[in-house]
Image 1 (cartoon, rainbow, N blue to C red):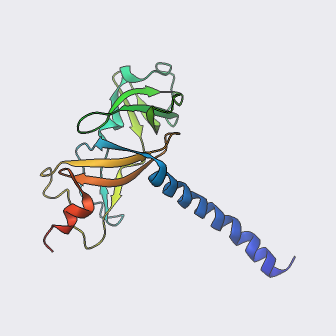
Image 2 (cartoon, one colour; image 1 turned 90 degrees about the vertical axis):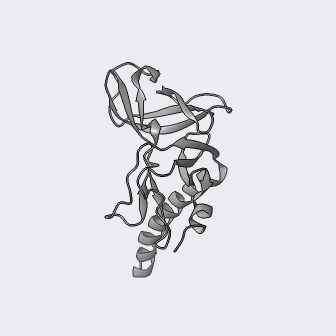
Length: 181
């Protein structure tokens, strides 16, 4: 086998893997159902990772009685689904399921079980970081002055993608355009 063939045989699979990840994320943003989720007390920008806002979802910690799986037998790292119900102004978590729900009309967001105790279940959705361009305004400052809501797209299999933020009810780009430079 020539050097050129070996080179391409090593490069192409890596490229295809990265392309598949990007396409899956794009598909989630385009095909997923839009839900609005409350953001709990948030932190300002993370100085060590660039212009990303930390926007933890309020549904990352839920009462243990909402978990329909085997009590106390679920281990950290397990995949669970959180069935969401529409509300005003944001959606809420109805229950935590150990198996994906059946029914096309149901909206359930996949999560990883972080910790479970008798009172509370801690979940990780991997949706708690929002990119902000370098020249853009930070909606978290002054701290606690604005209401931040996450706009999440959820596919039928439960994959979620953070699509946008609402800052006091307005899409981030529109809010940012009105900010003084």
